[in-house]
Image (cartoon, rainbow over all chains, first blue to last red; front, side):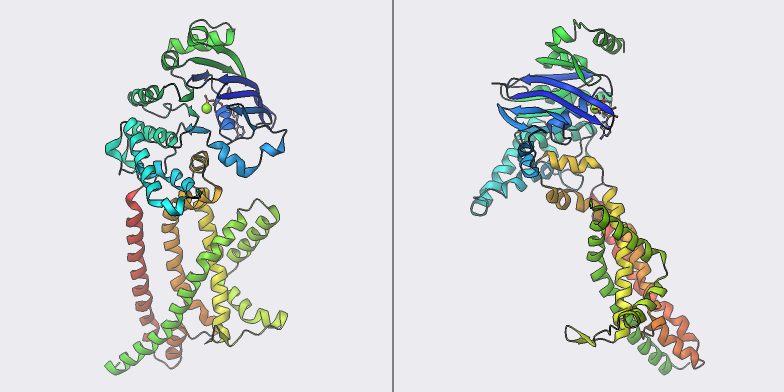
Length: 261
Length: 225
Ligand SMILES: Nc1ncnc2c1ncn2[C@@H]1O[C@H](COP(=O)(O)OP(=O)(O)OP(=O)(O)O)[C@@H](O)[C@H]1O
Ligand SMILES: [Mg+2]
């Protein structure tokens, strides 16, 4: 069974039809790269998956369970949406770390707030908080920033901030982790460290969707590539199919443009 | 001027300045939370409430505080036959003071609410979204993520406004609250002018302390950007 199945997602802003019916599915452990020119709807798609935008129609299934279908009000309950969100993680282009908290607090905060709702929280508070801390430290180590535990975001480079943001998202153990152009806001010499971290996350049980303009990264890391244009999926397949052997004129033009640079 | 008369004047001005301090403290204590309520109103998704609060803020900010003092002094009695109570929570309080406090609280709450609104609106959308995506509730996002950032941003404008309040308290004399300017003016009426100028010292000292306090708070919040 697919970990994620997206069916017929449509979204418009006023008269601007941004997504015109998006269908795809992902298996557990797969990495999907989404490429496409500016304005093609990539960010909007990720935002729909993370419930930051509500699609006009379409269905989202995680592990076969229907999470969202705008035609069914019972799936649109505000309270449930909050828990449904936890199936997904999102790493933003602009990091969006919480500036007033240390690196470690950025990572533990949401976990701690969520833990407060556990029935055993009062009784096991100390143990629970300890587990959260240890889990967070482990993840911080994974993104190679253990020594920055007590630093504030403003004391970090862009690359380091993005790695903290990745750690923060990972700590919630999302089933599907989404990245929206995670390196676009970075100086070129810092993109490498972030891409390396993302590549390092690839494993049999972490499913990822990466919107990126880094074609080499998509080719080397992704199992599946989607090329989007004007709110539709123009091409979908393996990197070899979509990147090295595109069929549609639009995709050919887009890729040759990128390779020229 | 003898040393004795200097001491006497100082003492009576100091006693009068207590009234200014009372207005200052009570206004702050009430206007700070009331302002936040008004902010929620003026940012409400419920349009009628939003426009009601915004119109109210516009009226309060668009008319002189002096006029508002008169309105709170005479308005309730003339319009509705309401008489202010002689005591509140068992503390005797004259009705001029009540009118002054009401005017100050409402006036300053309106100003504070606009400062808060500016602060809240200046927080990037990404901060809310980052919190939401991590599974926080709306109120958790507000209190755990946004609020401290708002506080940092509003400290400087709040500092300005609060220092203005110190000096504005002397406006209460227009409805005969026995504050420092009124007392100094009584000396002037008797031909002793210097206490009038001497009042500046009281205001300067008070504002000086507040300025130091506020720069301390700003420093404290300087650990992040
Ligand atoms: N909240 C919004 N309100 C109105 N229009 C929006 C909104 N968000 C996105 N759009 C429009 O949707 C279209 C697609 O935007 P989107 O950000 O999804 O593109 P993208 O593929 O991520 O582009 P980029 O590569 O530049 O990030 C654009 O035309 C944009 O103007
Ligand atoms: Mg985008």
